[in-house]
Image (cartoon, rainbow, N blue to C red; front, top):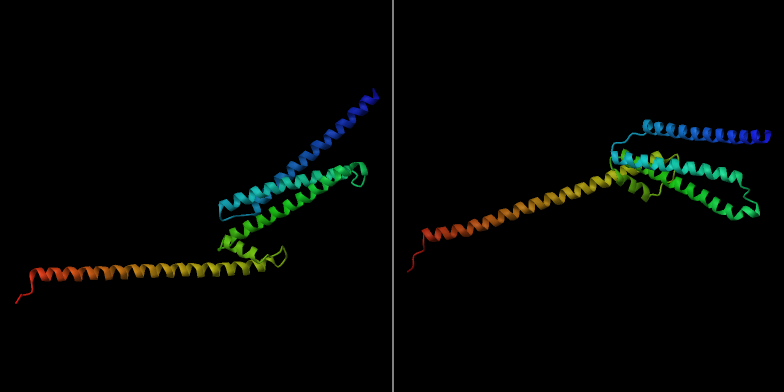
Length: 199
């Protein structure tokens, strides 16, 4: 009887731990979402949707990393018998960390594009310089945005100039065509009403 009681006590304690951990995870998840909604504001709803989706994926990856960490604690990674299981576990840990890094970088790019007047052109400029995550990022982002805006203005000026030249050419062509038409018709009208005398 005491063995049965001890068995149920152990099971009950493990169940309480599992429930407690699930509550912590769900509370942690809710807190993250509230912080995310409060801290990050966007000008464009598409950027916000993508950012929030990526944030949910990051959260899932973080939860997976916690599970991998728990498995690594349980398994002796240097034990010969568990080596076949340890290698994929370590690879999984690396892949998840890499995925997390990529998604965080993408969210950073989404925020840059959303805040910048140049939009995704600023991101393209940012990526072309391969700026690393560093404390100097803010200065580099501003410099990149300035370059992107300058390029955008030059491109817009070229397009505007081409448009103006096209309109000018069209107007000139129309004027010349009408002038020639009127000149030809005028000579026909004059000839009809004022024929030249034959000698």
